[in-house]
Image (cartoon, rainbow, N blue to C red):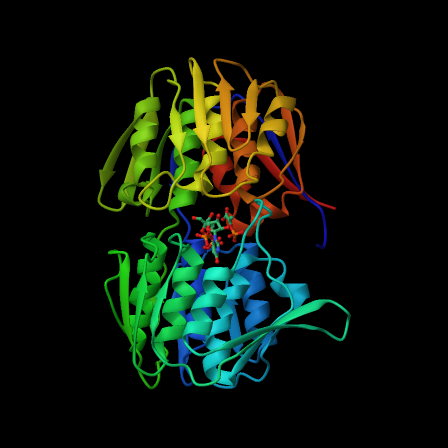
Length: 428
Ligand SMILES: CC(=O)N[C@H]1[C@@H](OP(=O)(O)OP(=O)(O)OC[C@H]2O[C@@H](n3ccc(=O)[nH]c3=O)[C@H](O)[C@@H]2O)O[C@H](CO)[C@@H](O)[C@@H]1O
Ligand SMILES: C=C(OP(=O)(O)O)C(=O)O
């Protein structure tokens, strides 16, 4: 995993000022996969978040033969995929982020096969890929498991003759929908995908693919139709703002009683989370591409049920658990998407929180106060929630295993410091 990353936060500062919301992690990753489908030209992605998952995706694009240049200061990624030469997604890179699996459709179309040595992502309990595999098979691919040279299992997907068909997701899987759309984009004939995901990032990726020449309709309706085309061209595209980064900064204002201007944020993308945060006591004012948020009264307790978009995003469940520790009464959280996303509760307990977990339900007994402690980020959103808790805690909080946080949030310490927080990032 490389060096240990730690964040140190001293709580008690009210945050105030203007912050730039990064481009969306969960939009740019499928876009990097999509850009590998263009057999000539250079794809230019703008507003790219400078996060570890993007760095891994760039390494992975190079491992399969693409030329990829990440211009960090310009937040621009340039990809030339004219000469892909390896179908293997090597474990040492691919097992570090979930988005690696979004490279599969490009490898199937360009090289006729994909070899998966590992798929990463946050450890949130069971994270199956059966909707992806079943969909690829329905398009004509074969999926087999074999033993690799190093003794570890490998999944081999062979494209065969990819033809359109009727596909479905049992539940509207985010990356599942993206992978099936990309696999269908260059398949012969028409594909219908039922129960497709509605997330804004899925729609942004459809917009990119359409600009590349793909024929896709029905995005945002749950039924997506893809008419296969012969080739896709490299284009320029600006990545949408990250709604989870937005939610975390909204909650940074909430937990410190601050007021912030979030440049690039879109309140609509928060779905039900916006309403829940209003119920807790936040005030929002969207002015063009700037979202103003402030809290001037006490935090009220909340009832949260995670759901697919536009329901309450599971990626904001951990941050709101941290926030609800300070609410004036008990809050109830029901995690419906992932069965292992409550490791945060033990860490918040070390900071003085009172949380009861029962399966996928948690009761946060507010009002309480938080005190600084040494805590561990078990996954990305656990990391952002612990930073929020640290901002409100008395004394110093040290967050270890914080590579996870860096997987999804860019320049966390710098952006929070500019708003008045006392936070530093350290590496061994
Ligand atoms: C890179 C990326 O975009 N990651 C996001 C994506 O993850 P990801 O795309 O992995 O999440 P999914 O929407 O696929 O998963 C949702 C649920 O469906 C289940 N499932 C999914 C696929 C499948 O083939 N079989 C199956 O059973 C999963 O186990 C999970 O319980 O959506 C999640 C839910 O919004 C977010 O938390 C992640 O940040
Ligand atoms: C679960 C997450 O990401 P991934 O799917 O990349 O693990 C996340 O962003 O919180």
